[in-house]
Structure formats: structure tokens, C-alpha cells
Image 1 (cartoon, rainbow, N blue to C red):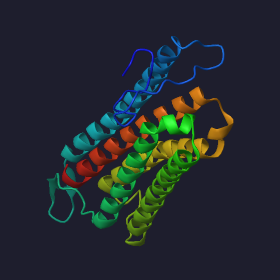
Image 2: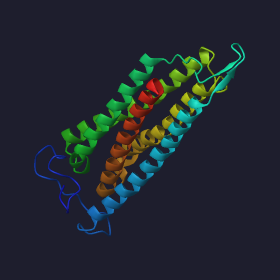
Image 3: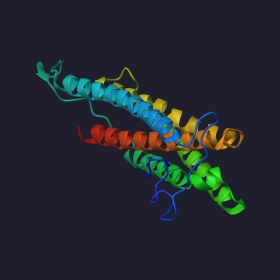
Length: 227
């Protein structure tokens, strides 16, 4: 990545790096600095989200180790209540979110076409952006279907600690993933009305945020299945 350009040769598909127009009131030398500040802010926000889920994970492990009195056997047990998850649906939802993240990465790498659109390239970027939005929305709907499946099987938030943790972890992640989907929707709806530099920043930050939410979901799914 060039010091003067936020787009590297790799991001531009191996061709000549594309230099973006600086924001109004900002010269070309200042634009990469501003972009790094935005990325740093995003990194701190994602780190805060990560610490939240580290806390949830620690509470999960601690709670699982606390023995519970079993009236049937008259003793204490550390076994969790059985929880049958809709694994196939959760795996399908995972694929949807991964594909949404990949589609947004394509948009990020084609940002030069988004900032300086030709008729062909602009249409291609719009298609990838729409695909990311649809896939991200489908992921959220799929999570809702998974929660409905648990409710239909008699598993509520008050059923037990293990079930409660599943609802808390997945719903908290869904709320944060919703922010990414809304950001994609905002770019698709209002991207043409803002300056090219601001459009680039929006695409770049949204792509990295979706990548972070995808990695976080993969971790949560493995944690819930195997922890």
C-alpha cells in the first residue's frame, strides 16, 4: 500500500494503483492519514466488541463449572442441560455471512471502479454490493429462524443456563452484525450522493467490519458447539 494512496496494487487487481481524490478541504497527503485514523477507530471499536464476547465466553466457562444440585440423584452435577441446536441451519447461516463478507471484499477491491465508475465497472460493483446486502440480510433472517426453532422445541431464555447463553451470545452478535448490514444498505442507497473519498472510506470500513463480524461468528459457533 502506498503512503500516498490507500489502495495497493494488490487491491486494484495487480494493475496500476489507483489514487483517490482527497476530501474537500484536505490535500492528497492528508487523506491517507485521515483514512488510517478512521481504521484505527474501527479497530478500537472491534476490539471493544471482542472484549465483550471474551467476557461472555469466560462467564460461560465459569458457569459451566459450577455444580448444580440434582434432586433426582440427590447429588451435585456439573452437566449442562441438553441443548439440541439446529446445526445445519447455523452452518448455512455461517455460509451466508461468509459470502456476504467476501462480496463486500470484492467491492472494497473494486473501489476504484466505485469512485471512478465506468458504465460496466459501476454496474459490476453495484451487483456485488447488492449481493452483500442480500446475503447479510439473509443471515440475520436465518438467525431468527434458528431462534424460532428453539422456541418451538420448548427452549426459552429461562429454560436453563446453556440455553440462555446461546440466546445472549447469538443475539448480541446479530445486533452487531446488523450494524454492518445497515452500513452496506446506506452505501447502496446514498453512496452516489457523497464525495468519492467519503465513499471510499465507507466501503473500506464496512468491509473490514463485516470481516470482523464473520470471524467472530465462526468463533462463537465453534465455541457453542464444542465448549
